[in-house]
Image 1 (cartoon, rainbow, N blue to C red):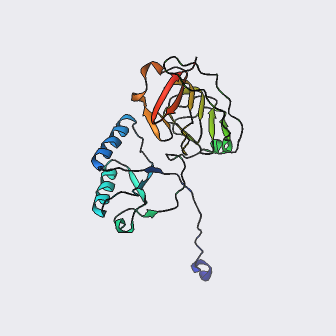
Image 2 (cartoon, rainbow, N blue to C red):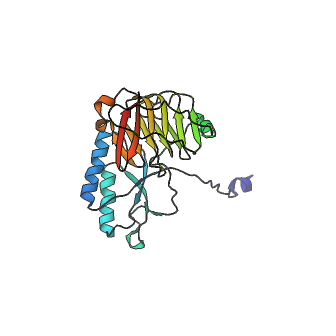
Image 3 (cartoon, helix red, strand yellow):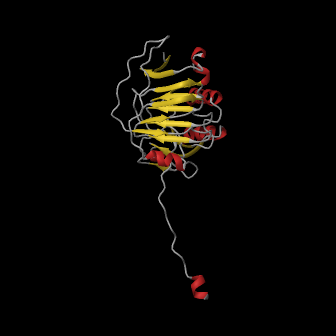
Length: 255
């Protein structure tokens, strides 16, 4: 019996894949941190519980500057779990480890519930919204997308995330405050959009966001974003489509 109890047991190792937010700082760091603070102020909790990868490729900095930057982020409750693109001279035991072979995905961490996991396997065509008739800005006509689509036939509650980098996401219901929708293509919300919606997260600048009632905390397309404070007041509570024109996010009501 003693031999059985003291016999070493093999260690079980499992692979895991997690999503992390990738930050790409710019010089001078003081100005970049000021913009980061502005985002955090206007979107409370944006970095809460989000693992972060710091992409420093191409930056002409030394180890002390990098150490100071990581400390500044830590003071802002931004947890840097790894460095990407860092030269070997920048690495050290007092800094996060180097990470390689990162695959572009969404801009944020997106834990998926069991229900969303089931929806992940639904590859159907997203329902197309009515043709827009904007009142304040002339939006170009939407183009049909060959990308696969995911349909979620339920409201998305606060704290939940829907992540589908392969294509469009359609929500048949509302998106609550504190919820997140992340899509590689366009996002269609057939209900109030009160949480965060991030479309075109894999580099699709032609992606759009459609909703029946705009009350979003944050909207983003291809990495460009607007917070609730940046959205035009006369669009709030109305059916809206949002698109990217160059590097400018534009929005118009749906007639």
